[in-house]
Length: 217
Length: 249
Image (cartoon, rainbow over all chains, first blue to last red; front, side, top):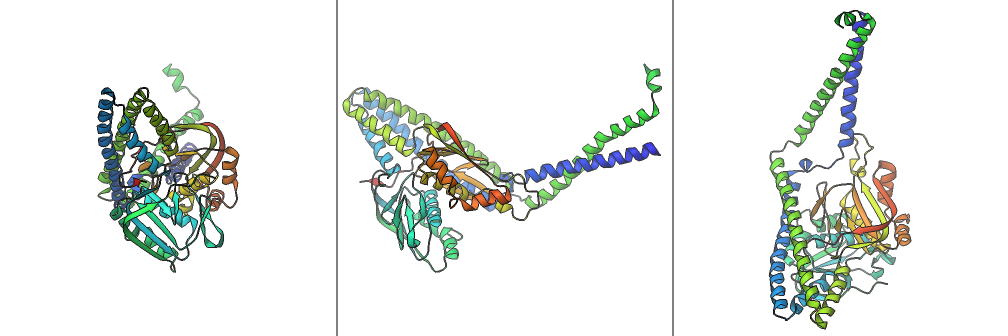
């Protein structure tokens, strides 16, 4: 009897321990991110985003292959690779925001209450939609740009005060950027809920001009 | 041998039997609980399309890694050709110098220097079933706020889990998955910041900065740590340049 009771008690304790081990393990693991836990809608968005990025990479690889061949031929014929270097410099001047730029795009007019964090979110959304050059009013957003709250409900962009109403201009594929901002459930809709009295107007523009980034102070 | 085994103390034998039961019982308890919880998980997430969609996402990410490697290789080839051309003429040499300067400004060159390391991670201390899980995990906006604070502190180069932050970088959130430069990333997020250490640390220590993240760290166990670090390596940007429409003036 005694030995049976001891065995049963030991078994019960062991079962309990087993359950505890799994529960503890699961409680740690519940925070791990897993694509399997995403909804099909989220996964579809994610796939579309990955596909877009991969297409951009493929386009650039194709273009770069041609440029490598052209540069080789050019050097072999004694002409150097001046044309290739100049092309790359033009691209990099825009990418680094050290040159002013123009081209088609969109303009987002914000009239009313807004803040630095929302401006940062809008910039992020435009970048994700493929914006190539962005400005807020007439201040260029550069690779190291930062936002902060300014005096009297203004926004500081790289320490420069930009007052409302704000016009955020972005050069890039205007159709893509327009859809990205105005789609149902998109950032414009979210802003309209958070800032109900603020008016947001998004327009496609055939030509936009943005200045170069200001020298860092 | 057999004779001596059968002649053991009966109390010791009972103890041996009890221990012999212990391991299978613990294993059984482990299996039953795991199975039961697994059923619970599956019932909530068993969506017909998830498996193929997840496979497709992973396949695209793998393809992206391969494409980035090809792109890096082609950029290196073009660099070598331009270097060789630079030795042929003074004009080419001047262009090469200008290119190197612009690449550094744009984030297309690797950078090394002193700075700070910031780590952002989901909480690992709150038990399952908590109602405010949202507060205990990191979001894309947290990463954006950290980058903003680092730039404000005077950062010169930043990477997030080896993704260089450049002018086209977006921190994008789909469901609970975070993408930086269109690349899938998982926590912990290690943010390498090269810049003046005291100024960058000062920006992170400023009580008016990152209030939400600091409160969630203190209350919900969100992982957020900023440490001084020397000789940090920040890799070059390896994505597409995406300058196709804008024209320089």
